[in-house]
Length: 376
Image (cartoon, rainbow, N blue to C red; front, side, top):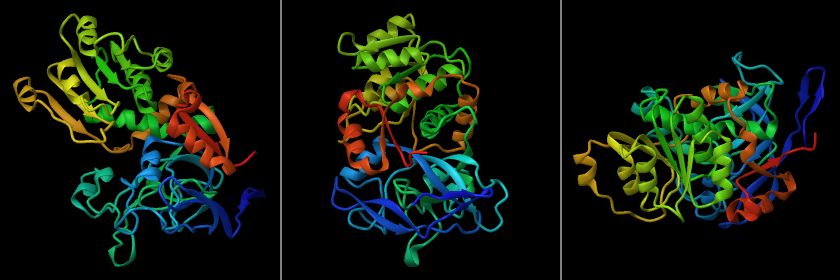
């Protein structure tokens, strides 16, 4: 099914392999028609795709996917959003990219017509999921509201694409969007100024990329908290000045110890721990800022009075807005950190269900599980 190169162009088949989501947790390999790009769109031949915690939630529970106004199950929906590949076909009017360009992708393409999109907040599009039938307002979020990347091809708007640097391999390129989320979190916190202190709670893929991006932008010190020494050690390799295993030391006390009792300027909460926000409030100094990236699976209680008394600002983000992937890609090109450290496993296209299990169950210490779509 893969496209062959002929004279600088690609031969594109009529059909492609694609994994679709049937019942919760049940992925099935099938064939679909290859989608065709419209104006301001390109067809991407997908070469590699990584599993994200968001994919795990969608495949097992449904939300935050929204397909035809409801849950994504048994709708011939293809999940997956952290993919990269080559541009193999251009839609009308496209000159921002050329056939053969290697690209990584952002998830969200906003409707362009709502209040949030007009303000540049396309990851908070008010028409999220409105892309079907009489409800089609143009919103797309591949792998969330439209078909994603566990397939041979996908259509992307040019606004969602970023060139992959020549010195970045396919597996590593799937992590550009992860680093973009960390970059967007720092943007939302107000923009990291060199010498400001940052604590990241939760050494998952986004947390580890947060360490790398924060350190590359000059954060001092960078503190990483978590429960797994293996991941904390990766954090050190990516730039963390201090790591704290919360099984052996209270994280709030550790942050205060490291900062001489002041607390940090910023906290990025990536763990999804139900007490994460409360701990974050005790970690930041007065006037500090907290960005919530991970989210708990149940409602949590928060000491709002403490937020008010200490003038603490709390932000939530979704995705990798403000074209953060472009800036993250620049850090990859400059080799400011080694993102390959968090790529732990590689599987083939036929083995997507196994790759899903490795990612979901963290088998063999899995962090970023990548699927290579073709052998060459």
